[in-house]
Length: 351
Image (cartoon, rainbow, N blue to C red; front, side, top):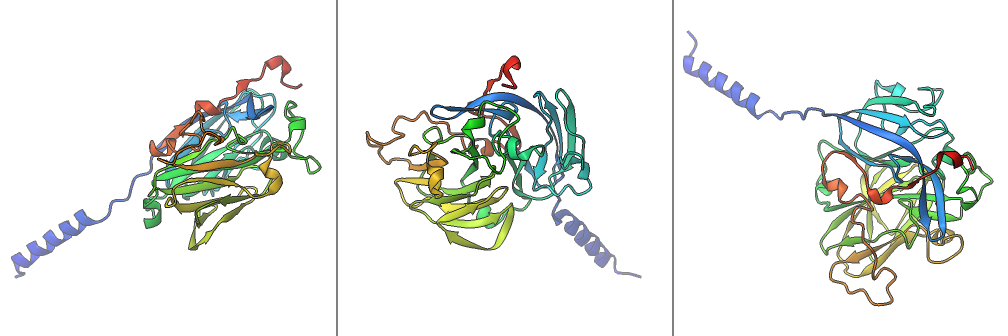
């Protein structure tokens, strides 16, 4: 006869092992509504541009989800031209018809029509979304892009130390086509304004930090120019490329962000002062030749005095210009009213 005590101990051990096994996080189902609108935004002093804007704003809304989540996104086209949405970085495993490529995975979303995308957030990182119709115009100079941040189920020790996220989407503009839909962005066309999150200095915003902060700069090449992003006073630990963690992160002072690329740099805020973070392509540092302009921000430490001559001494501050505040709010879709454009009158759309 078997030993009953041993049998009881074996059962108790099995129960203990079952109770202590890690429980896999269940995927959330997230459903969002997006529209595409024709609006006009002010990019730089004296320069406004007509854009095709997701939910009426540029950049488009931040979509923040977790790895494994199931997404349903309903997109309504309220413009006079056709569009699609490509979810750049999502591998679309088993959902290729949601990849957003016209005449390959779907018909174009014609004016007034609606299309629904269904896919799983199958890999983490700094991803994004953009139109895939006439990308040389719609993406390059019409602002049809926004961030898609997918948090990993198991963040690394490095990621856990981050206290502030800063999303920087660099792009270029062609003022000669700023008021004319359906033109521009071609290989012979010339870009004369450059921006971060659709604003050129001085219309961009500072990054305000406290000594001891650990900032994750998520840098995007949202247009068709390469931006060499140079941070003064600090080393950037380049840690992620296109959402993928680098096996051997390395320090740089200038990150080469090409079209479609994303680089994530981790920076320890350990040098109080006011330090510029700018594009090191010289012509990008101007607004149509006027210095200082382009994709510029300034790291402003708490407690550092702003002299009377400081360019942003009396700056009206938007703490969510880089979606830093929205990234703290959990998962969902987040808008910034300061990114909203002015509606373009229907009768004058094509002029």
